[in-house]
Image (cartoon, rainbow, N blue to C red; front, top):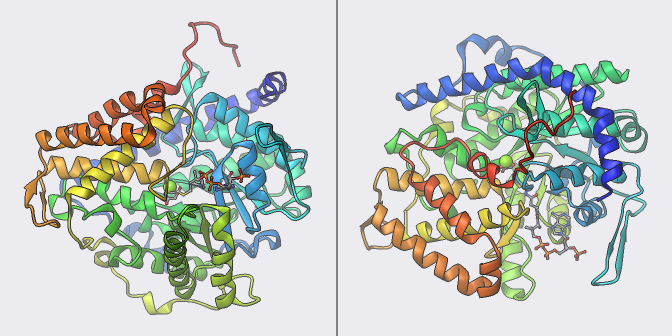
Length: 537
Ligand SMILES: CC(=O)SCCNC(=O)CCNC(=O)[C@H](O)C(C)(C)COP(=O)(O)OP(=O)(O)OC[C@H]1O[C@@H](n2cnc3c(N)ncnc32)[C@H](O)[C@@H]1OP(=O)(O)O
Ligand SMILES: O=CC(=O)O
Ligand SMILES: [Mg+2]
């Protein structure tokens, strides 16, 4: 990384960032306090639901600003972390959109974050290249590239390398601010056809959080002298409380919206978190909680209806399968699962979807194109009025299925390996032929926690064993042995598997569930400098 360039970039934007942090930090603190209050309500037996106070928004006849022509067609979007080669490959992949990820797929070390900003700036300026010396291969952009969206971190994550008035900065404002400041003008010229930049916004729980983003956008537009409504964002509906706020979220962002997305993995994680004090709502094995469970299907159906009523895209989510290079039969089976998932999405009315890997794009493109034909999207053709009567109970219905020892083992094996990768700077990894990232790892963590907390019986394998601390201790030991065998002694010794195991085990066995695994782990990747060594802004 060019550190001289980086410090210039940082310094130029530092003043802007500091003032936006000062302007918004109390609103953010309030929004996070409200999350805590909601958690107390749910822990005391309450259920999330539609807010009677905002019925007028849900029933009102309003639409969002028209979709910018540059992103009318989003039938396949590839996602990935902001490494240099990854960005070039994703932009060249043939997908319509690339979502560059500072969130679920990135371990937010200072180096990754700042390297990512430099890489994105070079991508927007179209000067990005990468030389893979080992393979003597040079990577450059094609003439035709995907449109770039950027996903900053969620509201809950601090950026502990930047202190403002003695407090760590808010991570997402750093990600947004740096990217916007350095790319706004070039992006609008080269990519956005006069609009942009474009964003994905993660992990919101309430429309008041969307309102903060709307204010951040308006402030950025004003300061840079671009028209209000230039910046556009797709909000991930990936928390259980947010499914009851979809109209309200779009309403707050109506001048800046370009749709909602079904963030299915965090949504499952959020189901467990929201119902952490409801032992009658325990999850079956992770592999059984798919989009065909009634509560998941209802969430996707309602998202489509809501988006199309308001004139914006309803984006589908991520199938976790990735290509299996060394086994053609298993590879075809994985591809078939992806096709099936995408067919369900396009038939339901989704306007596009996510791909985890470039190797999946042709198959996904074919499924969407066969169904949508030449239409750029289905916003005005699939209204889903059939789901107008969907109820709170439909959205909360208990997932069905069994719990097994293999489920417990798989969660443990995957959770530890993911965390070990994250601690060493890698935020998305292939494990057992599936894509794993922060959202999928969270499911493993909270599911183990839930099963331990309530001492569930593993009813799916005929053993009738109860999940206890002793059993979990044995499972952790076995799985660490298995991981060492699978990755090899040398990699195991050099890696951070033991630290990961400690954190993961602590998280699974806590009396009270922590809100986020990455908040606990973050301290391990922060560079700590001596007091007083920073610059004043
Ligand atoms: C729940 C959610 O939030 S989903 C969204 C967040 N998660 C993600 O974005 C995950 C995205 N996917 C990935 O990170 C990767 O596909 C992984 C980690 C799962 C697998 O990556 P790898 O092990 O590198 O896969 P593999 O070896 O098959 O890669 C083959 C080639 O495709 C490239 N590639 C793989 N995935 C991607 C991607 N998502 N974007 C761009 N290029 C990619 C690799 O860089 C490699 O390129 P090369 O041949 O030029 O060297
Ligand atoms: O961000 C996406 C998800 O599924 O989580
Ligand atoms: Mg997510």
